[in-house]
Length: 589
Image 1 (cartoon, one colour):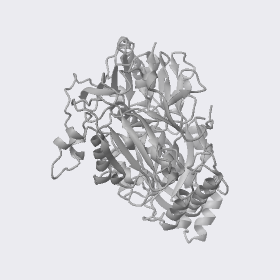
Image 2 (cartoon, rainbow, N blue to C red; image 1 turned 60 degrees about the vertical axis):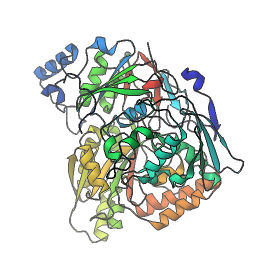
Image 3 (tube, rainbow, N blue to C red; image 1 turned 120 degrees about the vertical axis):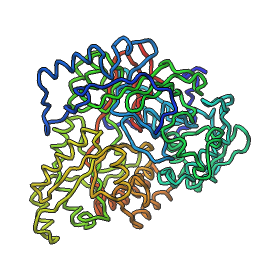
Image 4 (spheres, helix red, strand yellow; image 1 turned 180 degrees about the horizontal axis):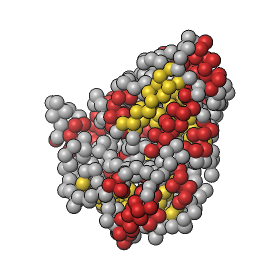
């Protein structure tokens, strides 16, 4: 089936507003490629840690990049017809929200390539040539041919495409859909129940009425938008239940341990050909993909730990896509005609999570005091070098019905911070440890910035850099005082956004915050028939204001631009709510 022919809009929720900005591997290994020490070293840092590299080292690095004598491909490979080389900080090993996971720079990209959902948000032209963006308020079929909605707005009927085969040769049926959601709600490691409520609160809402038909029933018509939005993203991935049930055990009833480090259980546009752990992963096009074989037929993900070297690989033609780039590198690449740097800002956020169960942030006065201990302008101008804007809130300001009344607009004021601390009984500098992932250089630099500004405001900050998996495990377990992260709400419905970081018991609730008052305010918004109406906007505003102004378990810092770039020979870079580059819809000159 031709992909263009499959792009028929299924449902329009609302007119789209304009955005605010113009383990042991089961796969055969390839020959292991060694990254020279000079390539693997970290030198791409911001003004807080100047790039210091000797002329000899620079020459060696450039020479290695040019000749391909590293973990980078020769430029001829990057330019090969149908083949795309993607340079990443590290490979992803967990690809679903049902298992214990670690979000890496390539997490959503890899998951998107290997898995598929019943529906998706369609791509439409963006303001920047060579790019597309998701239409956030419409949905089109992927594994589903179409769907209908009952007159009362409570029951959604999805009609599956017939003849869609998994990598293991099993045909997609309604049982795959039902079992996938049973796994999402049955696996102890799953975070799906925390992020799909109130639209989906139980797998029992999914019923297989025949081999190719599934119905989903929601409690209220107002939940329809959140239902469709979450089903169109990673939380809605459908798996080959025949294959996974064959490999489930009493100790692993949902095959979550079995799928850890595996990539062969989805219905995505690509399958994994080989993996060299920690070095390289090769994906090839799935000829049985529901929307047809992608034009880009081979994706080579290569690990290049240093952001500066990833940018250089793209500039030299040794790579076609670079993920996890620094602002300084993106600013430099903008002047290169051979590279496309996306202009449209991410829907993402920079957030400082304060553990409300550990001192000192178990004290509300300290949490509020820290809001003025951060030099927001310095972060935007120096760490992100103009590729981020200050934004102290979570909800999308351009969404229909949005109400921003009374929301925070924090400013750096060290004297006010010290006065607030003294009034709360803190007469000496307050020690704080900020834990961050060492994979993300920008976040590390941001933490250094906060360390500097907070010292003048009465806080002694220590920055603890940890491997991504370890940091997330500690943060989810409530073992860190504070952490900084960047991410995005992949479903831009107010209910989803407000609960993404705040649901009690969720592994994404790094603040360990549990507020019945806040949950009641969100529930009041959920009760409104149209979540994007003016009435809905006022309800969501009340919840967000209580969360961020009165209780302050999180301090939102800003909204960032994209940290990926692609060769200008690739057309159709995708702006997505999950920040993935969807190579399955891109074309190659």
